[in-house]
Figure (cartoon, rainbow, N blue to C red):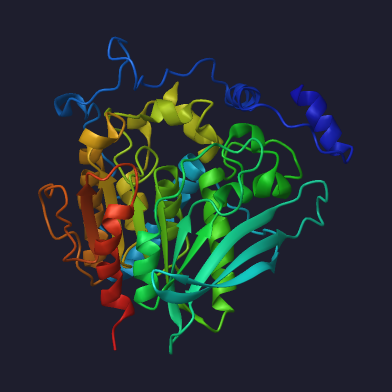
Length: 435
């Protein structure tokens, strides 16, 4: 099947989509991997492979890659050393974890699908639904239309900052994952009352959230429908690319202050918000919520979800193909890079790391691993003349540690960022509302 798909591609036809299982099997064969270690079971406590929550067993690998040491062993001692160290970390993340974003990607032409004048929480606003038509002249068979909603306060005398959320905008398309109804627009009302706008990007309109969609979406368009190479970008990088195209649009809007745009997301979209903030230095701030394995936690820990889970056929598409090697034959301890280094790439910009209590989230979330990564990333802010994390011990739930430019907060409000928005907005206001 793989050979025939490649022949069809050479002949100028787009191969039929493979299932996630088929593409995953193709990737393992390409990498010479016979079998991966199974991911942890998060449902059945009687399973011998049930996810670990015992902190005493959570750190099987004694060494975590150093943040402030160059590849040649020299210390990163001054601000002038950071660009080189940053470039080294980016290369490792590109090659081993998230994949390489193509140097050239298609342009996007935005269309206003609808405009509505409305009142939200007593604030007059203008809401637009926009569609970003990605140039598919190189491969007309693959169509990518980015779906975005943008709401701005109607009566303000200055350009508005904007909070961009990875979420869902338009009606769910056939085959897209089902999602619960959106919560009441509490944080959106707060944003508008502050004179800020909010926007919601549907990541699935950029790249499908499954391995079977890798020869469609922006990844498939760039590859003309052919399978990924092992260091090609995954869905997280593709979603981040989509967020960057939204920021391009905002920069042309005279009602938006494009230097004050935050990126926000929860769970897999928490991972995407971290990747976006790390790679696109135009974003002003970030709320990275419950990003878990592959996000801003220590990846080599054995607590809750593990590398093996993300490397399986259900989630591998988020990452570069090379990532799956760390679920066999390599181990997470062989990774040359880790989550605290991803987070450090957000420095020196204001970055708020949020996470749900494991009492609410269940065993899957690694609260301590996320806090560890935040502490280990803190020196990047300090090196660059900002204040790092303001605490050294895990703060109590509901008590954000946000005195520095790197903040951490745990809450008990469920799998959502909503409880952290009031604190995050206060955090952003320090930077956005300066006279």
